[in-house]
Image (cartoon, rainbow, N blue to C red; front, side, top):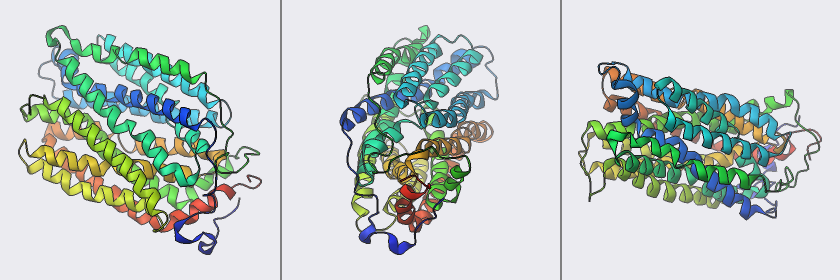
Length: 447
């Protein structure tokens, strides 16, 4: 194993030794397909949050109106999804370094689409819990694989913007999930119309899965100009734990994931509890979805652009952009808790804008500081850690706090985790450029 080079080996002005790679043929089509799949990935995830009050009423409170743990149980639906997702991601990350990544993606998107449709058929809480586990398994085949494909299509200098465009699906897909769920749930509440929010996303997912089978695999490491002559050994995977940028980025993403997971899951319930009135004729949950879409879209693209542009001027720019975003989001989230509606919507927009500012840069860090031979595993381990300590537990934890206090108290905890993530990211800035320059030479015989 080759250690990181001394700091004077890195090019001037924040550049890195592996900036000069080229974009691989077919990159545009791959980005378009992966973006479309990621869009439905997040629609499938957040449809559940949008119709959570209706599901709680149908499957829990209709059977036991006095259930004191109803919200905590609903939080377990998110936990079940995340646990199955994070536990299977390392398996698929391992396979992605040994087999066709497009095949794994096709299997994953088909499985989670069918499981989402089955969620709409659930007649009991236990069955719904099981279907959400299968949604997580399907997404586990996609999460660690898609960004490694894009990293093989696009070089280091472009990855911040490309991954930002790819991860635009997070706010837009999440928002569409909220909008779809919010609208469908009001079609005919007495007839449990919330179930159609799950049915409607199945056909597009199956079509995208079929399209994935028709795509060609790019050479691993092509955009880095590094030939992957062999696979990493088990011992060499420990390089990830010794790469400070990777470790600090994963810790920062963990705090952020804890916060955003709880925020996304419980926001519809908070709006309903506060009896927030429609604004300009738009119901609160669809309005929240629209705000998420606009704030997230603009912030995700702006964050990726800022990270790439500042690389030429500031060392560790991806960390700085990510950390400052979360630090500014914290007071905005606190202001939301004490501001009456409709003015509170302003702080909802600002908090979401600064939360999503990190999406492209933080994922670009993961791609840039890992060798192509272990990049899929690097993303998979990151997924495991950020979810097992993040949104696998945060909906349940915040739900339990709300059962014993209030959702406002739970959201105060969420704000503190935002601040923690921002501080951790700022601490990672001094290490990023050295780790990026060293990544292509991490393995003996890897270049």
